Length: 278
Image (cartoon, rainbow, N blue to C red):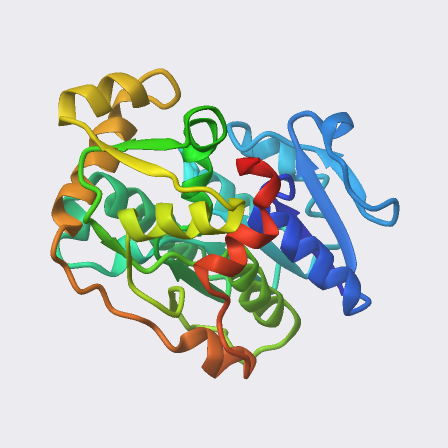
């Protein structure tokens, strides 16, 4: 079997590549700039651009299964190409946002639902992985932790259930190498609810010094985030934090049910990425 991994340069995609290789599967990866991909030598790398679905015709030749992340502007055209290539199974990195009430009207939920709908309409057997907030979102605090031992936040008491990206990759590998998750759409989370303030404290404990939370206004936060992410994402991030204050988000047991192992904690993610904060 040969698996095409789209998005192999990301934390989840990289974990999927490693997991597939560990199981002895043949792996092909795509990138707009394949010469910049740092992957094991036994991974075949091809040039393809998600904004040009036709560029996938070659990379899809001989492919049995595809791992695809859902950041697609025109998913219908790409999935038509995937279906025409005779792919037997697509595993989509979607989002828990697609499963929430009001998802069709929500910026984040609606874009994932569009990709999922395109996959369903293509007729290709599929699995939708719907993770909640990534633990790796804390990486955006790294400069504040390193330089000032402080993290500015507008809603430090927002509650999340952050998931380690390797947990997502583990489930993706099972989906890609077995038929047990065809037709499934598991919602994946970490094992514990944590406020943003508590996450900052975990990072401080890991680096061995206190890290202060500096409370911001929404306007201050928006101005800071706008330096790094598009405006539409600035609004979405702040909205998500605002609505998560005092919330009790669900803690999913799907990772353990699927893999038979306990899910990784936020503390484990920090330990795995401690260089970011030192």
